[in-house]
Image (tube, rainbow, N blue to C red; front, side, top):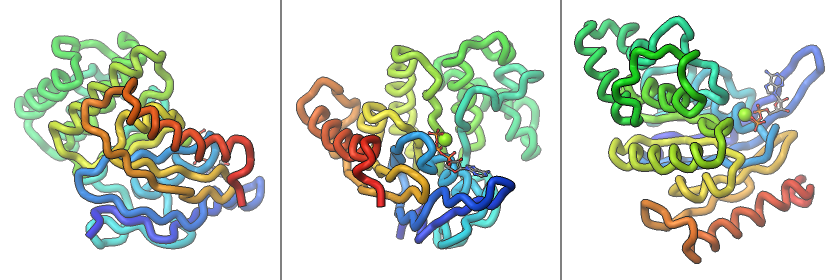
Length: 257
Ligand SMILES: Nc1ncnc2c1ncn2[C@@H]1O[C@H](COP(=O)(O)OP(=O)(O)OP(=O)(O)O)[C@@H](O)[C@H]1O
Ligand SMILES: [Mg+2]
């Protein structure tokens, strides 16, 4: 059985601007331990899908099952890393940001500081836990977000373009690092991106969405390449080209309907 199952999921927003169908009939099964990249152009509905899986928004059609039970609200078994870099608490140190969820759950001070330090080390920021968000670079903030999500020991990580705002070099470094963490922890990951190379470098499967409105899953491609991935290999290039062709058709407007 799939750990996470999206069954005919749709979302139509109704607001002052009228009704807007963001996504339509999204069907996707994600197995435990899988790294699924949801790839699509800007505005196709990626964040909308993630928000529904996270339980922040309810679908207006279909249903989302987690271990066979319908998702109705956020839960600690789903850890979220948000799009952008502003979701850390400015008034807390990096370490206290990481420990925040543990504090909410009543974990004692010593235990949560130990755990927070462990995850700080894991994301390569050992010794920098006293810094506040304003004293961190963009890449460091993203690492703290990842450490914060991992500290709660979720079963599934939901990540919305976590490296989207970073320069190419920082981004490639964090991709490699996070891929290693994923392999070490065995978490299920639903990772959103609009970067084809990122998807091919990280995913066990890539789900390509059509452009909106009414974004759907256009194709799901397995990426059967060993880790760590060699981005210059012919096999990698072949997968890249395949995914690129699917996305390019969307950008060119041939994929809609
Ligand atoms: N709360 C909302 N109310 C009305 N429309 C919304 C709302 N949230 C999203 N939308 C619309 O739904 C569509 C999909 O938005 P979404 O944020 O899911 O796109 P995305 O794929 O994450 O884009 P990006 O790559 O730019 O982050 C957009 O047209 C957007 O305007
Ligand atoms: Mg988005």
